[in-house]
Image (cartoon, rainbow, N blue to C red; front, top):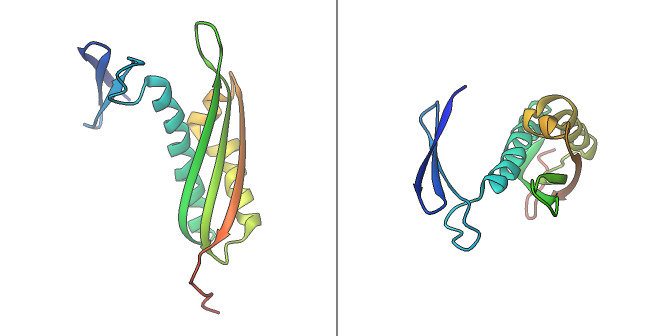
Length: 142
């Protein structure tokens, strides 16, 4: 895997992935023209784990219609301002979604599949939770 990051101006940078994609970073705390590198890391953990959870639930034939992970992280007060804690809360909406299947999907992502959160868990506390909501206005097709 390869990537490069190029300085644009002030504290704005553009990252180029080996697969040909670009993303802008902004480290200026007053400008906020793009996510900071730490925000990108937090979102990367959410994206990686969401891919796992959705994939596992689809393989389990769960009729999910919506998956959102809400992330919270705490940072050290002093430099380096590393993450000290991270929590991922999955909100799953669907039809007749089995909570045990969701719990299993979240656990598998946390313990086996999500390379981003597993890597982070080596240096900070990473926790997970979930909630399941029935899709409104949709009846089961039993």
